[in-house]
Length: 130
Image (cartoon, rainbow, N blue to C red):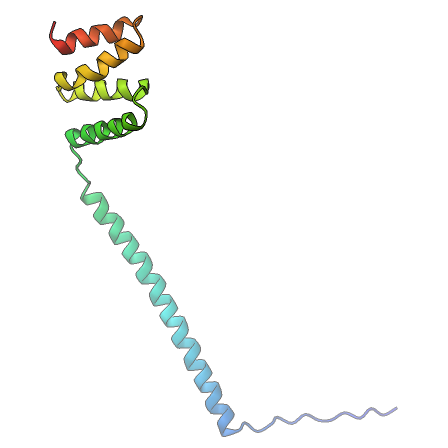
């Protein structure tokens, strides 16, 4: 049996096909280059921002932290005036801020809610200066 085999001859490359191949190659190289450049700039900017953050730590004063805590406790007490955790926290924050007069009101409420707690009574006496 004889098989009929066609000899495949290389097809001549058309000038239009050659231009398309060159354009496709240039496009792929351009895309790859821009992707590499973008990734490199992303990592380099991330590293430089980390470096800058380490050099300039945010300085927050103890007074501003205590003031923020005080506002937080006051907000809770506006919604829940009998909240013992917020009353105790507010009294402690005000004592840390050396505001004995401001600590008296929450301490009086705590003593009224818990008459058997001696530590609240002692803190109230201390805040009143007795």
